[in-house]
Length: 309
Image (tube, rainbow, N blue to C red; front, side):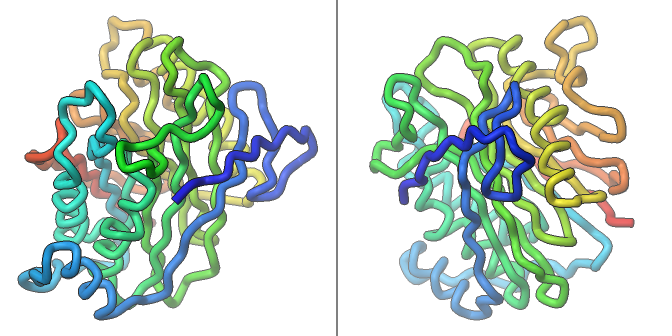
């Protein structure tokens, strides 16, 4: 899968998918992928990837009030010098965690575009067999070519937001993507992906600069202080906004690049004690967090349990 990169430079007030360029963000035409309730088809699809092995036992029961977000950096690029690469095993491990936890939203970093339809999206669909699922993928951009960076399998490399919407309330999904105008000197230009599940929630995923904390903080602020409010305004979103990712920033009150400096008023941040964070609007109540040690990537899975009003 290759994502077309049409940078939209109109300064007019945009509609979803035809956004304008604001100072810190260049929006990119980004289409969501959606799937209606898949039932047993999802289970068959994931079993095929595992060589026919079926999952044991149903996923846990849930309540309608809970809204759980799972942050995963799966290190699946296969690019030279990436020591955490495990030849696709992190995708199986991540998909199995998705199935086991049944999150409402998953933010994903360092994946290849086909990881989503082949295993990650069906894993969420298998966990929620009666509901709609969707994803929006945004590749990282190569500075030298202006085109998506490729995984070792020549699929686009980047981040995605993956989510579930109850069938009874499904009204469609609008996709958003963008590239930060502030970048470090490396060839990898950082981006974000957002999805508005109409009337239900807005979710965004990002992976910020690993080379410069000041740049990472500028990118974080560009997303949370500029892009997210812009998307909320255009889409008419009034609440339930969740942003997750590998921010490459830590919580440290003595550091000028303290991650808390990119949290807007009216929002709450929860972190994994390292560089992964989830920021959410305060109309959603915080319950708890859990870290899940993973074998095939160098980051923990980070679950943030929230409750809808």
